[in-house]
Amino acid sequence: MAGKKVTVLKLKEMKERGEKITMLTAYDYPSALTADRAGIDVILVGDSLGMVVLGFESTLPVTMEDMLHHTKAVMRARPSALVVADMPFLSYQVSVAEAVRNAGRLVQEGGAEAVKLEGGRPVADRVKAIVEAGIPVMGHLGLTPQAANQLGGFRVQGRDEETAARLVEEAELLQEAGAFSIVLECVPVDLARTITRRLRIPTIGIGAGPHCDGQVLVYHDVLGLFDRFQPKFVKRYARLGEEIVAALQQYCREVRQGIFPGEEHSY
Image (cartoon, rainbow, N blue to C red; front, side):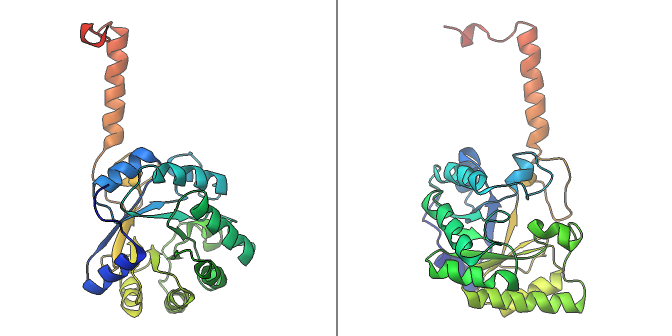
């Protein structure tokens, strides 16, 4: 473990002190271990695993069983970071009761310490019910990938006054429903700053500028392990994908040339 356990209370205190929050996705034991050793505050077991791990074109095919499987793997790393699990498509939209039940499964079976779900007014009653069941909830507004078909694709949200006003209202609604934090994805910088200032709870930005209380990126994007596409908001801190390919090519050459295994690798 990298340090003292991060809790939802600590995140609120970080906002109050003006300390930035770091959040990163992780989907298995080794990625959780490395994220935690780096000092990440919040690990998100994101349904983005559908695209960067399972090879789907979107997050929509990801199931509860997928999320449980990967959340369990992350929790085996026993991270000091707060672990938040995404609620996948149709795990909370159908009814309040089903939302509470599935959130409970992510905590009880998966070991998650909080859950995240997408949307504003339509899911506020779900957020309230899950919180009342004793499970911390992180909200998600702006570009909500599970609703990308309805939004017309992966586009910036809140450019016009009407949509911007709705997002501010929905952020406050989620806060009143009991959410401990809200992800703001692909919203204009000024709108993200307005929402962040209006809320008592931390905002976590992804493509929402520097004024949010924290930032989140996808593990594979940060490390250069996913090259199908690169959103504008992604900064690559390494190009491990290229290094991995080069290392494996060298392995192939050495096996074919009889170089590996050498005497030092033999019994």
